[in-house]
Length: 373
Image 1: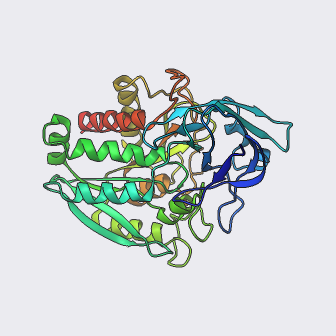
Image 2: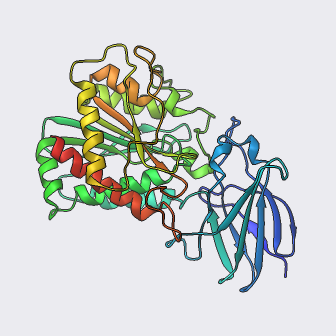
Image 3: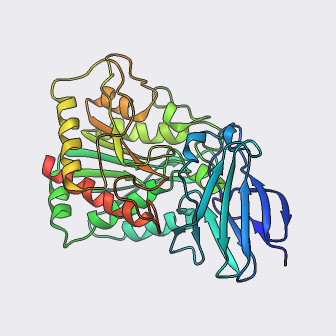
């Protein structure tokens, strides 16, 4: 029997170059109007017991080739429970090949770079949270293809907190984090959530890039624009998603902000800050560092050893959201990064870093924010 492979669905991305029995040679389609590629999501139709040999080629030219070593592909039979497959990377084969091996236990197998967060699930999330007591729904604007930029607001306090995710659509763990955050904040029995809603006004944008998410992009929107390089000068034509969110921030002001992401290469959870902004205010970095220290004490899934190199004074890239928000509002802003790979310090050979751990990390982040405030 010859397997079949298809990616014609929400967030699907794969190119079938050849199939021979239960083996396939594949490649990844680039983001529209862009050279970025790394996200894949497809399904294999096969027979139970088939020895699948799937090779995704040309990966040394991908956006982050350092992300493939020590990486294991995500898979699911039911699109609910995701696990990791036996995966290796051959840097010399066909321009860099990710080799996925698996004996099929069901006639349909889904594979992805990380557990996907579909636009259908996004709409379910928005609809369910919008019904909760004390929650206000706002559409901040629309994407290039006309999809809503959804924002959920809650809380009665004076501290303005912005949480936003999926500027880079392939970083689907970011919206799993958002689901965890929203579940916690709308739980009437959670004491940290009750305290936070009294102290803060939350503005939560679970998905800033719906077009890229649906199209199976790694990093860009419909126009091929990296939204996290648009915050100094967003435009209605190229980055209306950023323009809509930044305009809403201008209305409310920002005291704390978390931009949620995933990192392809670093096998750990970490945050990046704004140390290089030109108008750094007294106490601004101290609050950021205190949050970082407190989060490391609050959850063993977070660490401070691995991360990005700090920017020199006055050298911040103000086109990025964290630095622009810190500079523009004097806010304590941060980029939270989760791994596509497993967490180096607490490895899970079955799931690796997972949706479940992403959601629990959101709880830890909000617990920590409550203590900080």
